[in-house]
Length: 339
Image (spheres, rainbow, N blue to C red):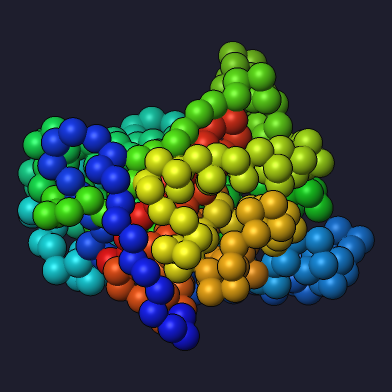
């Protein structure tokens, strides 16, 4: 928990229409936890090598019955309980994921079914690791337009389905898990304006190969993640800093108003580089859940927020700066008020 009270700031309204705010978070982490030592021997590296380069010590690995839908359902149930919102009152269920290897159908309707959200619309958002941030923006739009009073935004990933166990560049990085947030209509804005963008010339930094075009062949190899790690690191450790600063200016806040900085939990080196560039004051808590969860793709930011709230490192009403980014490239930064 932060030691001393800090100014709460006043968020600028992000868009016309009804304002909205975060009401509650919930998380689901797989029962199985995999320490570095379990995966490094066959890669020819040591646990310390992984920890020193990524900051990751362990990650969750989903069992066969811990599907994307099941993990999303469990995280969503917990978020609804903490928000005090009934599933039947949801106007939308949005699922951010990049690991639905079936491609179709989208999985948000199945999550809504399991929750009992019988009146909710729903769809999937695939913006890779930036999916949660983009889905939050969609949720605030639904509420601003009057289409929903409450929206459940869930991010769930089974990265173990797409990583190559023999590739040290990805197998030691990624973890499985899910987290959810309830966004509800509010009297005052709980979201600052979103600052987002894309860079389509960098689409090859992280891919699945072979892709579905290979299905025309008789023999199709299962797609596995391929990452240009150094190039991705160079972008992620430098480009997001001015985007974060722009989002704070748009929201009308300074670091003195902010309690936490929550970037996508790609790895600890990227987070350290961003902190060095942004230079937040000591009272700002920097999310570091990658140490326990690994890189959980779209689920990394909500898992990090849930951990900060549950461990009381931040308080209800605090402001946090979120910086989501994913391959494509796509990104979205925003100041939010925590539930």
